[in-house]
Image (cartoon, rainbow, N blue to C red; front, side):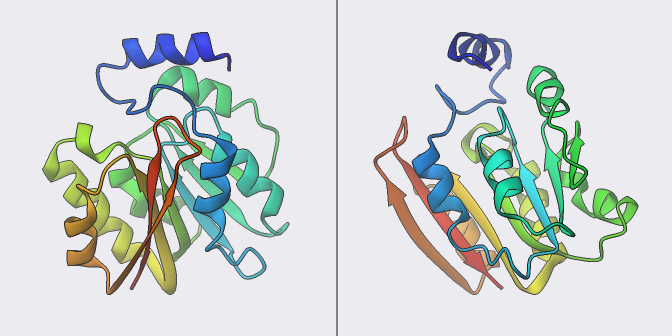
Length: 183
């Protein structure tokens, strides 16, 4: 997707897209660094957008793994459905419904949840449900990995997860914090 089309989607989104440009490959590398791809059987991606993380996940995932990619923006969803990979399931629905989609895809737990959701732009009660449901579906050694442009989500994440590591990259527009959360 072109930058021009991306920016057009940002303005049409009514606040559901929290970025001014697609995520950088530098941010993607830092987001995916905590993942043990050799043992990951089920990865969930929230806010797949233009597929920057999606493509990198598919490059690194083992051949038996599954990737459930949630995207509520219709244009982004349609672009993601063009990716031809049997391991990818693209979902045009809210991340709140993760349990339902794991169930219908015959997955008991997610090994990793990668999130690009703009928490600052989503109502608190929806964020709370997404975070609670994500915690519930994570495997015991699973991780929830989230990026944000501020530290505002830190207290929510710390209230749910035992361990929250923070990383940062300047090489993104805007620069971003990466939260690596463990049960």
